[in-house]
Structure formats: structure tokens, C-alpha cells
Image 1 (spheres, chains in turn brown, green):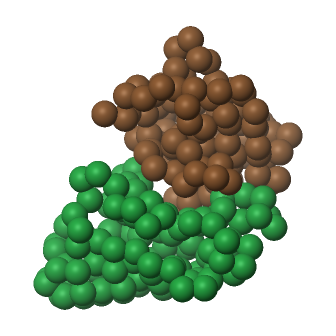
Image 2: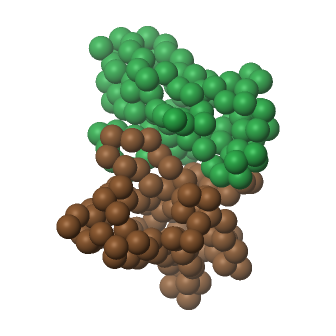
Length: 119
Length: 109
């Protein structure tokens, strides 16, 4: 079965960076893109961007452009999301999810990674 | 403010049928398929409707539809474990992002 398993929670100081991993199994990694979605406490879901696991092409939401980098390692079927210059407003649960580009809705989700930013 | 508009809360009794709505515009719902996600007690979202298709394992009590720029999720034979937050999502080609609704809290009385 399709599974997306994310790395554990992180506590960071303002100005730091965080890198979250998402290891997938149960399907051919390169056949689907992966999205990253942020959910701040008590808030809705916010799409951060998408990466093609086939060729590494990325598309980022404008509000994260310049601060986020998404990568995919086909040798380990793992996707990564790095977010830099963290502020307290970045305290949230970050989800990786299969799909989510313009031509394919999200169908499977990771379990989420809580990132807390505090001085 | 979310690009897609959902009711803040909806309630129903066990066995009842409820319909959740998701209003967008021609740049999103009017053009692209809609998906619906169920989130129980702040756990990870789970896909309950994928375009017009029911994902594997989701009971056929769930059904989806779209009319113009509004999508709907109908849950028949409401059960206690349907109580959750429900989000709709679509692609928006003007904003060039995937958009989500603000979420509807479904309470089963």
C-alpha cells in the first residue's frame, strides 16, 4: 500500500532552517509528483509547492519563493523540503502528499511533521 | 482568507444525510477537479473524494458533485466517526497554486 513516512518533529530558533524528509513506498517514486502542505495551529491547509519526482522540476507558491527548496532523491524514494529564515509564524505541521500539481489532486498524505519555532 | 469558501460548521444526527459545499470561481473549481479531505482530531488529512472518484476504502455513503463553480460533498447515513474537519481543494490557474477551503467542522449529534 502507498505510504509516505515523514521525519520527526523539530524545534528551531528564529532565523534557523529546517529540513523535513518524506520517504515513500508502495508505488514507483518517479511516477508521481509530491507536494508539501503547511497547517498552522487552528488553521486550514496551505500548499507550499510541488516537485516532480521524475525530473526534479519544482513549482513553489509565491509566498514561499526564495525561502523554500524541495528536492527528491530517486535512489532512496525520499523527498525533502527545506525552509529557511524561520519565524514563529512558521510553527506548523508540515505534510508531504502525493500529487498536488496542476494536473493531479493530492491522494495520499504523510503523517505530518511538527516544526516549532521559538526563541 | 481562503480562495475556496466552505461553511464553518455543519451538524447532523446519526443516519441523516448532510451536504457540505465548496464555492470557488472559474479559475479553480470551474476548470479543475475538486478533492475532499477528512481530518479527524488534528491528525493527517485523508482523501474521501478524488475528483468524481471514491478512493479505495471510502464507503459509498460519500459522494461528490460539482455545478459550475461550486462543489459539494454529500455524506449519507451519517455515523459518529464521520465527525471531523472537511477540506476541499482544487488547482487555481490564475494564482498558479493549489488552493484549499477554510474547512467545515462536521458535528454528529
